[in-house]
Image 1 (tube, rainbow over the protein chains, first blue to last red):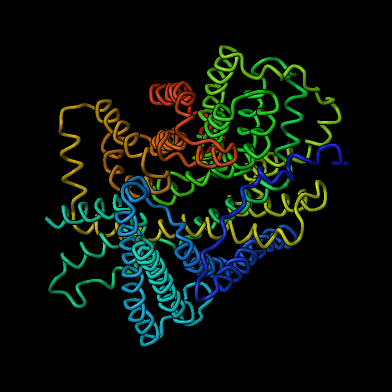
Image 2 (cartoon, one colour):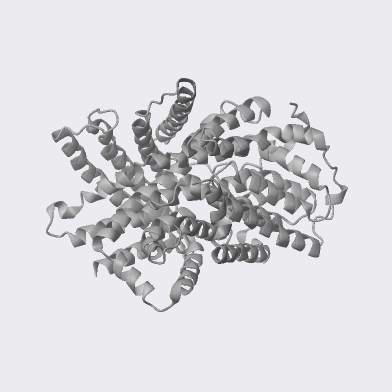
Length: 184
Length: 432
């Protein structure tokens, strides 16, 4: 299968829009990025292994379902944290990205603060969920391990998201201040 | 009172540019707290519980996997070879490149599950090719953006997976089968205005001077891409694998083709592919989970029933209500993406669907057709955003072209409403 005749168009840099360069963050985004990559790879490999095992042995390891769901939740939170720092979450930009610079900055700060608030609340409340799981000795329905092994990560990552959102807030705020000072 | 607070808080935050998931979660949490002022912790423990319950569903795992499939096939070089093969079949007549773009987007729709991924794959090849043939960039971007919208109708589809998680009576295989005929019709409906506009405005004058690829050679090169939907859809149909597993099989197939056959994916590209698809999936999944909080407060506040009663007793009749819903969703669809629309509106609309005894699978196809239209209706058109970025045009410039294509696809939606069998015949034949 030779592909030499059909090389240039897909190597054309215009074909794949380059991801925009990240704004610098105090805590490197590489933490979230590496976790995201590892979890995505693990999810694909576990599910693929499941297909192969069932195909060759007619038995399935259904317990992987529970672990995959756990990994998916962690993926949503960890990669969601990077998306918060990069300001990539779905939002209506129609009003917040028009109008005066002051309004844009104000709304950007407000949005980041709201995200920080929500995940801060979720982090605090999740601690209570973990405590209940621990106190009542809940075990997971599939594998039967203590439930808090899973749930303990939720307040931790939620707090991390909250901090990422707060970081975004500070960057937006500093941007606004820098702009005001730059004016004569 | 609290219900009003819920909606006003949500709308205000959303319009102010707060991420949609956060708007849903905060409004839901505020409403829960306001309704349980005397309970322990204001009943807010329901917030984390519903957050995780909204996410902890095995079928949702298909979303990151199909997003990954899209990201891999984006870079696998399959789209380019499919385009060459399609050109070899239809030749170099006037208006043939727009036709090829739509046909290839439909075919890739049988591999990937999301419109923007499709727009990136097709746009990456077609927009440059169309500009070489003399088509204006804004026209190419419009055609690619519209064509990619058929992706969420043609199985596999992330939109159908989300809908199926929200609606107990609609299974993923049934929805996938139901989207097939309307999806193909929608694609055909796009070809008519695209080719007509190209001929009317004498676009692509250079096309006939370009070489026509040799048929057998391009078939041989395209065969790896041609086999992919057969593997995915055939494998699901034959019961070899579930939708999630089909996605994962497609991931490894796509990686094999991209890394060893077409050699367009290098090992170090894997990091970018996994990171980007992971982040994109998280953006979807976070909205799904935070919408769980919103849906919980909706259901416990008991506001769905009165709203449903008011609507069904309004004297509009079944089709009046349906027309009103579509009008509402088209308006909302100009500002919201498809998954958010599903998550916000399906819990509200489900009682109406049940009242009129509409088929939930048919209703899902209608909603998805609506969302597909929204994907290339400016100003918030996710597919056009991708194709315009590749074509380096502003979205305003596409307005003159997308109108007819929107109208044409809208007619298909009217057809599916008038003849529900268009959606329901295939799943029944297949026994879902």
